[in-house]
Image (tube, rainbow, N blue to C red; front, side, top):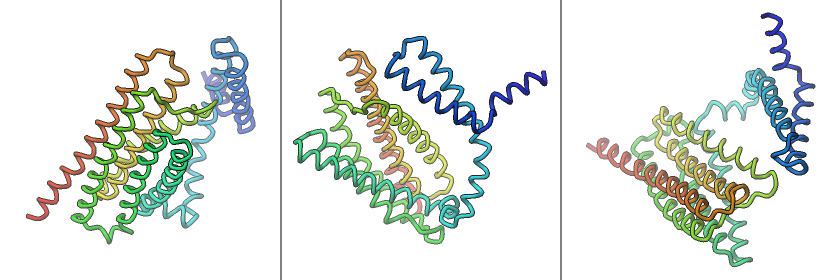
Length: 290
């Protein structure tokens, strides 16, 4: 028994050299599978097994280093503040997201002017509205707990819910046209796998943070996380259209049903979230005023 345990330990923790080699070989084998042999060939199954093993040993090697990396991060003042100050963390995230969304909105607007594209105009409008919401929250996130004012934050929370109503209305128009015209996002080559990882990571992180930040009883922080959840849901919808376009069979009815169902779920979820924010904040403000 001890012998098998030692063998298993050696397989899971072979050392960084073997981990790097397995990772490189898995990347090469996957590239060869998709570009040369095809995903139905016997070589594909070997590359999948090798990739699964490489991912397993990579995770096993990285996890024990996380505590050391965290201690190292805490030794850097700015990183320590980011990890311990939730208000600074939210403001930093809003600033970065605002910059990215603003650049993307400008890019889509330029494409709309250059190519007279309805899709680019619609997406530019969506990202402009998203930038407005993020900028509104960025200017209202408290610097620390001493600046907390529940009544004021509830009003900001309600205003964000109203912004989400407008954002959902614009999103509904965009997805209706996507469903009608069969438009889908396009990620060339292997980029679709990176887009899938990003979409699932964003959604998981958004859900976790939405639940996590409720315990701080700060409506404005919860509002920021609600906006992140909205963008993560839209990313999932974009990913679905791209995957159907790239991997789905040319079945128009299947594309229509799947796209419509996902679009409906996303729009209804955002609508329900906006309604909850407006109704709950209004009730709490009434109780505070009595």
